[in-house]
Image 1 (cartoon, rainbow, N blue to C red):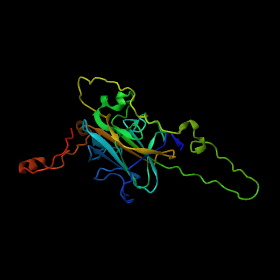
Image 2 (tube, rainbow, N blue to C red):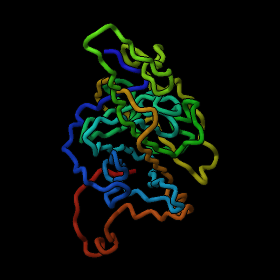
Image 3 (cartoon, rainbow, N blue to C red):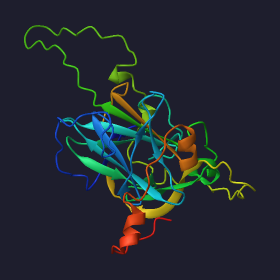
Image 4 (cartoon, rainbow, N blue to C red):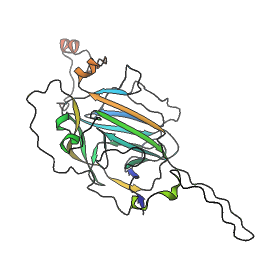
Length: 293
C-alpha cells in the first residue's frame, strides 16, 4: 500500500466504546478537553486535572511530577475518520522531528467513535518509549539537540479527511475533456511524488546518540520536559489518510512543576484527594499501591 510520509497511523486495540456525540466540548470536571476529539491526560495511570489558563488564551495547564510517566487518552467524538498530529516539546511524537507548519507530520488516525492512549515516543510499529516528566535539560528534545521554544508544550492538531472531488462525465458523444483547474495548494495532483514511501521507517523516532550532559550545579527554579522513558508495547499499523490543508481544531496543554503553576496564578489541587489528616487520625485502612515517585 502506498501512503504519504505525512500521513497515517492507526492505533491497534483502540476499538473503544462509542462516546455520545452530545458530549459537550471545552473543559469538564473529568479533565477532558476538546470538541472533535476528547483529550485527557493520565499521570502514572491516574487521570490528572487540567486547569484553564487564567489569561483566556485557551490553553490548559497540568502539574508535572518529576519522574512520573504520563500518557494522553484521545477519543474521536465524531462519525468520521480524523487525523491527530501530536507534538510534545515541539517534536512530532511519531517521527521525533521538529513539527513543520501544516499537515506535513505523521499522524495517528482515529476511526469514528474510537479511542486510543498515546504512551510515548514511537520507535517502531510495535513499541514506544514512554513519556516521562524530567528536568528540561534531561528531556528528549534537549538531549537530541532539538530543543526550542516549545519545551513544556503538548499540542494536538485535529485534521478532517479530504473528500474526493466529483468530476463531470459525458456518457455519449465525442470526448470532451474538462477544463483543468489551476494547480495550487488544494489540488491533490500537486503533491510532490517524493513525499510518498512504500514503508515507514520504524526507527524514525530513535534518538541520535543522546548526549550525556551533566546536571547543572543548581536546579532552581526547575522546569520540566518530557524524557525518553522505558519501552512499552504499543502496536500500530499504517493506513492511508489524506488530511485537509488546515486543522479543524487545536488543543494546547502546558505542563509545569507546582511552584511555576502557583507563580502563574494556578494553584494545583492536592495530589491526594482526601483529607489525609482526618484519615490518619481515625486510622482508616487502605490498600497497597505502587509509589508515584
